[in-house]
Length: 186
Image: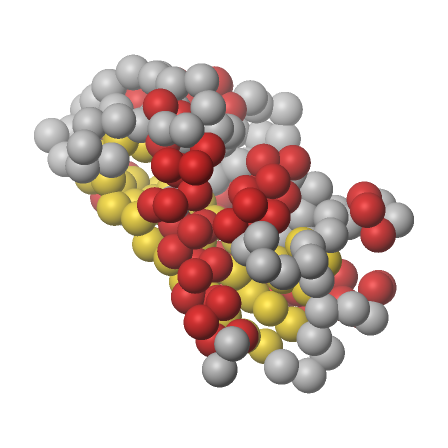
């Protein structure tokens, strides 16, 4: 299966989580493409990516769309998690912005939503994972990417303070992958 992303962190995580499958990156398949994420749901973006990459490669595809939804901000940034400050913004810039915004509220709760879509030209199978937590008061941790250093789990650690193995056991992507694998193995 081809994983429909150029995000090295997502590729690594999906390969680790779904290790029982042969997973290839776009680069490993010689595909140099970025699918524009212009849908207004995670599922819409994941389906669009899966279909577009399948049409190019004619091989089964797994596509992911995921993001951070902050309750005090009415679900923002949601599908815009990576892009809400523009394409040139860094993870650090986005994370510091979100901390400053959430500091205005008592409610720090948030969730990470991940949709993984498998598409083989005929069947579309969806796995979903939702991880609940809070937004930390400062960036913490060195392991991870995106908002991992500000997403705090109920145990008080951010995703970036976990080892890769620990994160892959609890992340929304892991939950979505387990849900997807269960459906694929039916």
